[in-house]
Image 1 (spheres, rainbow, N blue to C red):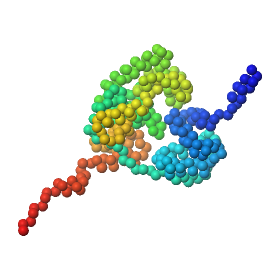
Image 2 (image 1 turned 30 degrees about the vertical axis):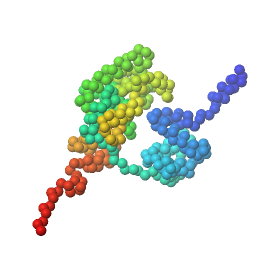
Image 3 (image 1 turned 60 degrees about the vertical axis):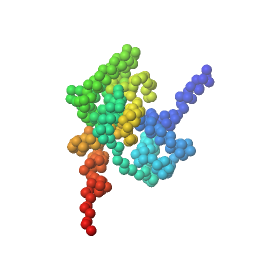
Image 4 (image 1 turned 90 degrees about the vertical axis):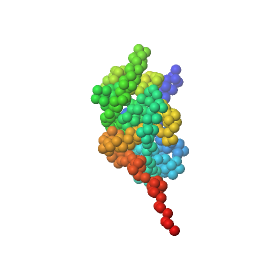
Length: 343
């Protein structure tokens, strides 16, 4: 027994593994689970790239070498390289308490200017008509409001206001809230959907479940609020699952891959020869509003863009789609033939 007690003491006194420390600090600072997973992945890759050396034994030169490798060998996008850099900055500053103070002269990934894929109004109608059920409802919301996929999935019952015809998007990109309009045509089907969700919620309560994840410190401040109807997800998962952080069995929101797969199937059925995703509906929303004469500042607000230059990309798309601009070839074909000169 003495030996066993000593073993228990030694296990308890064993220092935490580095990645467990990273998770602990990120959870204290209320980082999202998706950011946590991304940072953990980049820190792992950094360690493996340098032959499993501990980051405390490395510094600016190793960080620089890793970021350069991402740009030159892996050809990652600028945003991807920035995310990796942010993960390492977090590791050294918040976990190891040894901030990177030297200059990082890594080769930077180039920012590729790509125009967004946009559907015509006719293609959008074909795509939506090729869908059914909850995926169709979600796709209509994305196109009708301009929301991002995760913003739609994280909607709670209390965020949908049928009286004022608006949806409150909370903690969007940049942790900001905004209002978007609720399309009138979707209200009946959305109400029917919420009635079905309420039935599932009440059944969960009877079985001892019915609690959802609450953001920030709300769970500590209002310990029973997670069981209230207004906090339930508008688009819940079809099954209960264990929370990866707390271990509590809950019904989370739907997995994003569910809608992406449904959209790809619908695009094939609708014979749309473009690379269509959930984000394509957001791009189409903005472009079609511009076509209808909506002010660019209004579109910026609806999309939740901080910088107007981000929204301006849709003016370039619209300019290229404009029917008033004709190809020189078409104008050449349309010109009447010159009369032949008499000999």
